[in-house]
Length: 326
Image (tube, rainbow, N blue to C red; front, side):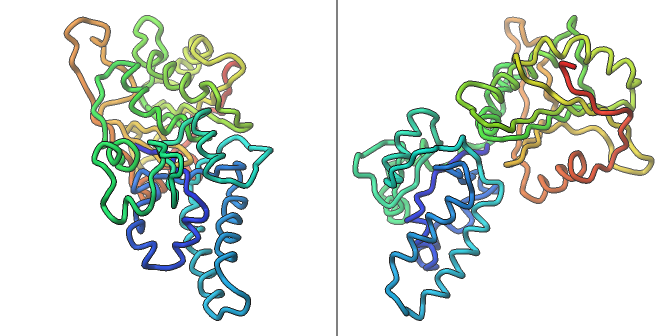
């Protein structure tokens, strides 16, 4: 639903020419499902500098077209770096971007690497010529360029978690919104799914200093005291060792937004759930076939919902935010 692409700075530098960029216009960003990686140093500015330096190397001194090319590239870089995916900082870098990126792919894979060339014929490297000329094979196209359609997983904890795994493995802040979340260990359909999602979020090889998780619940139908008691008693048992999750409990405002929809909101894009983040009551029974439709929020929807729950809440907090384990 949201996938990480490593873009060769030299290729991006060529996109100052609108003819070179025409095919790729609109194909990156939240709405396209292809989000750009900040590789190789986990720093947006460093990646942008590599692209600008590559552009400078293509111009001779005093070329009157240079200033316009830099202006166009700078605007493009600003667009591409929105919601950029951050990777752990790489302290050594030998200057061969493609070779280093292929090695990184072996440690923690990208969805694809987009480059001008593919000298080692790597199956996960897609070249600009293959795309613009239409010579890329159907099989490779499906695996390393086309973003898969929105999933309809079975409503069991593992399938729901795997459906959103690509975004959980890339984000730095995950906000789980389920107004009716119930951490009841005797009916563990909520706890099971959240456990699986947190395991992916904090899985191996993340290596990021800042990685936040939040759970947002409604107190409109249940009192916040009972929700807090259950969360304190039962959430710590599903949180990976050494990690914490913030619990926020909301109440609706009269005439305001309803606390109803379920989301996974993140810093790189968001997903909506048609039914909920919980698995079905029948999930562990043979013959269970209940499923759900998940959908990627558009950039406009993401900005709106992120604002409502995170940056400019439209609900009232029923109590202070707590961090678990305490």
